[in-house]
Length: 242
Length: 244
Image 1 (tube, one colour):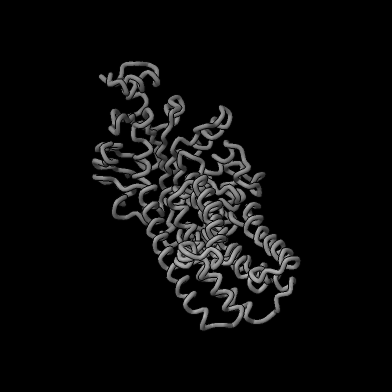
Image 2: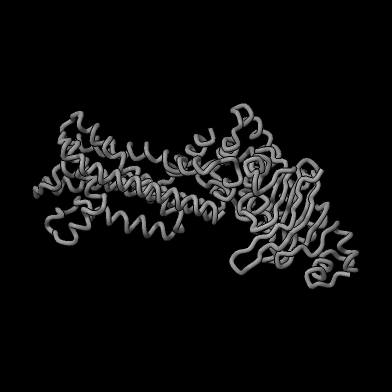
């Protein structure tokens, strides 16, 4: 079954078209990477799909629910980790996780169970009592990701999840994302092409709000006639598709 | 349940910031002590404890605007609000979640001021309870003003506008530091067109059990509270739609 299906999804800001007639389909349980240079429309696409901004025209369906007419149901089924770290700085890590459980209406027992699970999965147990604002960037990202996952989302949006992290923290976070594959449908935007190639089931490359190419990493390389994915990305963005 | 969770978070964020405690509670208390000391040496009727305490409690409430505006502006800038907008929280959850937890903080701030005032010689009577209760409309006004400013301004702007400008305006235009009749003219007219002096005079009237005198001031402050709350809700909803 399709987890996400967009139909001519478009977003205009005054005279700028941020996303222009996007048509794509993402299957349940797959990791889909949305790539592109800055200003390509990746973040705007994620904002529309997560009901943060309304499309100017077109629509998208998440597990069959429209993002324009069924936002309450969409908000129940998604998790979002925004580009910037989004934690409550004066709350402890545990309180941040409890906050997300609370806004999703979890019972006390379920809260405790989910916090135990996520703490173990993300290695947060030793820092549960620490204030989130005092943690390093890498740990804040982990907490941010755990907050997105604690509601047991069917679809998870990760907007540049490793932005600003050092090599080690990035590698650790990619391991966490890799472990989620297959269990949750993941939509990922990133500038790290190698990692996107290694992790993604399918990849879409955007430029100026349009989807230039869609396929597996191998299909995209074949369509550009190059061996390295980075070269294929550059060729696609430069309009050198076969 | 969702509202309770979000309200709890608001209260924790505010109460765990030492600057909030310092300014919100420490500063008004220092002023009561300082002005009472001046009154002890050079008697000024304005600084008599029964007259001074209502002024200081209203002045203290102006810091609540700073607290709530700063929290909302920070949330907007840190993308936390963006994250929360993708959850089942409704617009009402956000608005009440940002404002309701500050009301008990306002009440606690006023009660502490009155405890100190009693220690400094204010007679302990039931009218103190009425005076504290009469601060409710002014508290709503200041908290709603915070919601409004936090929805429009960035953290630095909030610091300047709510931290410096509003607290000073509240002090000057409420007749706390000097009798407005001493300046008179346009200044006095402006002061009486705004809610600050009415909030102080309402509280003074309640403290002195002069209920007929309290009514016009109550209506004035209530009017401002309703208008500012409506404007704050509209602006918050607008930024929720646009910024999101």
